Amino acid sequence: MSHHDERTFVMVKPDGVQRGLIGDIVSRFEQRGLKLVGAKLMQIDEELAHDHYGEHKDKPFFDGLVEFITSGPVFAMVWEGADATRQVRGMMGETDPADSAPGTIRGDFGLDLGHNVIHGSDHEDEGANEREIDLFFDEDELVDYDLSNAVWVY
Ligand code: RTP
Ligand code: MG
Image (cartoon, rainbow, N blue to C red; front, side, top):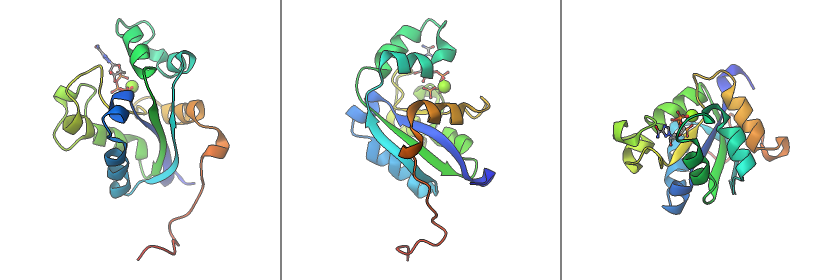
C-alpha cells in the first residue's frame, strides 16, 4: 500500500442508518473511485464513544454527542484511495449541515448540527485516520485486494 492508497475511517451515524442512507452513502464513495476495504453494522458502547470523541470531552455538547452516537447502530467503514481522508471530508460537507453545499452528503441529507448523518476522520488531525481504523476494526476485518487486474470489470 503506497501513500496513494491512504485509508480512512468513515461511519454512517445512527440517524443515517435509521433513515436508510447507508446505500446512497456507500454508492457515492464507490462512484468516486475509492475502494472499500472494511465495513460492518455495529453498536457503539459508552467506552468506544469516549475513546472516539475524546478530543471533545470538555465541550458542552460532549454528553449529547455520546448519547446520540450510542443511540442505535452505526455503519462503520474503511475506504482506501489517493488522498482518501481529505477527499471523504470534502464529500461530507461542513460539520453543520446548514452550512454544507448541496451535492455534499450533509448538504443533501442533513439540517441539524447534532445529527449530521456521517463521520469521517479529520484530515487536519495527523494520524486520526489510522487511530480510528485501529479503534473500530481488527486487522483481520480489513481486506487487502487489488483492483488493477480485476477480472469482472468490463
Ligand atoms: P465528526 O467528528 O462527527 O465527523 O464531525 P466533524 O469532524 O465535522 O466535527 P467535530 O468538530 O469533530 O464535532 C463532532 C460532532 O459534534 C457535534 N457538534 N456539536 N453543538 C455544537 O456546537 C457542536 N459542535 C459539534 C457535531 O455533530 C459533530 O459532528
Ligand atoms: Mg471530528
